[in-house]
Length: 571
Image 1 (cartoon, rainbow, N blue to C red):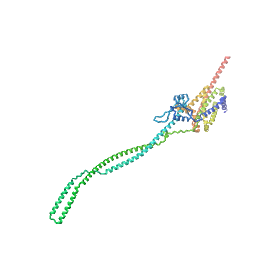
Image 2: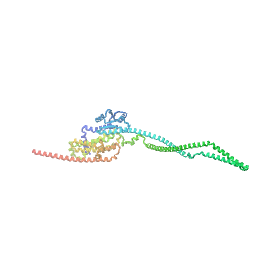
Image 3: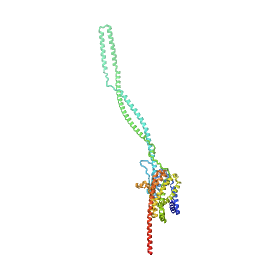
Image 4: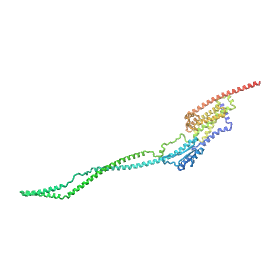
């Protein structure tokens, strides 16, 4: 244990021999976390400058620019030409250019088009600009769609009300048509029951003359009979009765004859009968024609009724379809799928989201460089041979170098975590678990730095190799480029990157508040990395010592040979 302390003390004295070296250990993490906290402790949008070109800056364009300014964007207007705006993109004066039509209202079937120019070479900013502008114009598009949808719904509602009203009017017309059809049918039936058919018989007046002749002849015969009775030898009573009867009959004949002789009344009666017959014939013709007209009218009314029934049925279907339009809100009609984003972690500042990656980044580069530097200093130290022949095991040397590095990194971790409490008070509960993960990560990167120190002979080359390894691990970590954007084969390899594992574990612990039990598999992987790298360093240390012994023996063998040759030449 004493050897550990002495070797660690020696390594610390070598590193902190210069005042600036000592100060950098304390000031570097302090300044780093202060700068990051002051820079990223915000949730506002990036400071983007957006150029806007339009042939006329109308109220619609002004409303759009005001909406962008409300999101802390800087708006620069280019009323003359969009080419000037595009040139300023290449010069870095503006980040994007918008070409906006004077009016955003859609009055025909041609959609309005908004063009924005981006610089694809600025890969760190282009997607953020594109996403921000697309979301803004999606909102504008939705507002316009709501206006159009509301206008359409208003027209549909008005049409539905008119259809309902006209449907009621058609119902009244249909009812009146039914009444007319019924009345026409009743009148037709009533006219059909009237019989005004006049017979074809003719009225002959010659029978009157014949009757007169018969009566005159009968009267003459009665006179002859009267003479015969008077000449007959009849009793007075019998003759008187017969004569009385003949006289009575003669009187009646004279009366009838007198009536027949007065034929003006009969002629008038016959004339009236003919006139009535003519009128009845005309009435029969009129009734027949009216009956035919009523039949035609009834048929026409029935056709009208059938058409009205069809129109009523069609209007009822239209009304049913219009009433089936259950969505009457323009916002729901234009955006039927409402997407709501729920965060899986508490809302925080950019520092909250960057903190896990920044912690691992600082630990990685510090551990790599310190591990490489300590091994290089030990290898190039004049006391290296003395330390080699000292009665201390290789494990002790390796562990002392590791503990020296870990001690310095522990100081940096404590400084970073303490200063971060100023900006990240909510993460205090997760700091012990985060410190454990950082301890494993620091061990891995320290051993990687020590391996580089053992492999390379030159200190400058070793430092360059350590920085290069750190850059490779950084590029394969997802902090600069998303891992989802690389090839599947390389992505599967990058999943075992200790930087990726440590950063994901700290993210779960710090942002999502998970427990160590939920990340035990990742912790085992980090621990396995530590053990494997320690064994590799032990192997490299053995090879280095073996190579050193061979060099030492060759050097002394050559030295003894030179001494022997010089001694022989002297003799």
